[in-house]
Image 1 (tube, rainbow over the protein chains, first blue to last red):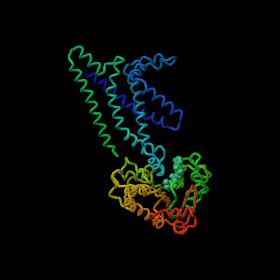
Image 2: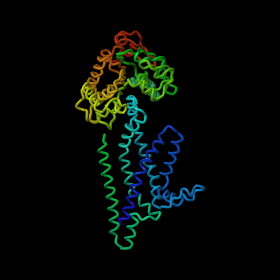
Image 3: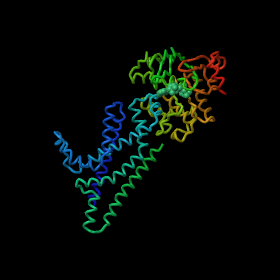
Image 4: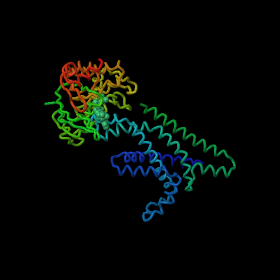
Length: 207
Length: 248
Ligand SMILES: Nc1ncnc2c1ncn2[C@@H]1O[C@H](COP(=O)(O)OP(=O)(O)OP(=O)(O)O)[C@@H](O)[C@H]1O
Ligand SMILES: [Mg+2]
């Protein structure tokens, strides 16, 4: 069971750590002056949010190798890696939307104040806009992170033994449901810890 | 040499011509109150002087250097250099909400490497002293009253040692009992010969603190002269009507 927990935890951490920065980059491209880039990112987000994550996991693991011509370069034979890639690509799209919302709610007076103080666009972005964007986005990010904890169970679909899969096996073997209870408590504790962490962050960056 | 020189400035938003043909010379130490009806282009004009609005025609010179010549602007870095001695204070303060008072003041001069943290801290204390807010140095903006926020905003602008300060309705968002503390700070600055352009509806303040009044209407300058000439004894009917309607 510990092995299952570990896999769930590992998938969660890898996804969070990599999808947030990727989401941020997508947000920048989405809101950049380049209209073509905006469209590409909008399309990417549409696909990622508009199709089931399960389908995306299948696609990355089973589908990519069949891509004409370049298929053999896109083959990810490690199940975990393939699953993680799908999770990261999917969650990046959600985070991009969240960050974009945060960016839009930063008052335009902030850009003007920064400009008349002689800040460059880069300085304005990193010292003025991003901190406020993150603060505004925190509740939504927290929500997304808690959804992710539970979504990790989808990775069983490509034959990996995460917490839920292991639990089911144990229940089948022992004909006793206490393993389910243990799994539920594990998910709950993770969600709870996340909630606390985000509350603290919200407090620390309150303004 | 003029602190600001504007020649035949024109600005349209879409096909609405908001500023039609504005020329103006601002001398050192001038305190100019900009008055006029709503929608006459006062804010647009003020904002064009600090590059928040890009103009479509004419020229703007700041202390002899071209911010814009015949509607052609230099690149961003050059504009920043020309505007380095120009500051602006907004109606809604626009303090950085995620920074305390100290960091609001220090942020820009630190990024522009205008001194060590210690030097700038000292300077921030001196300036806060002037606006009467030393004890608020560690407060977050949300814990300040409107009048205090606006005084912090002025202090923040002063940190960059401006020669020219622009104010767009600095007291319009304040409760009436808080306007005085902000106007007092501006009054003190005028005694120090700071060059200032102030869009305001405070006619009393304009009469007493400004040495010149610029009256705008429909995208034109209808009058430019001493407060006495513009407010009290003007022959232009539009100007006369404007002040007749105001109760002050
Ligand atoms: N960014 C913009 N886009 C389109 N129209 C604008 C923009 N900014 C100002 N205008 C228009 O330009 C005209 C002049 O606006 P401006 O804000 O300069 O007037 P004002 O004299 O400052 O008025 P007030 O006393 O109400 O502040 C108005 O008709 C306004 O609707
Ligand atoms: Mg205005």
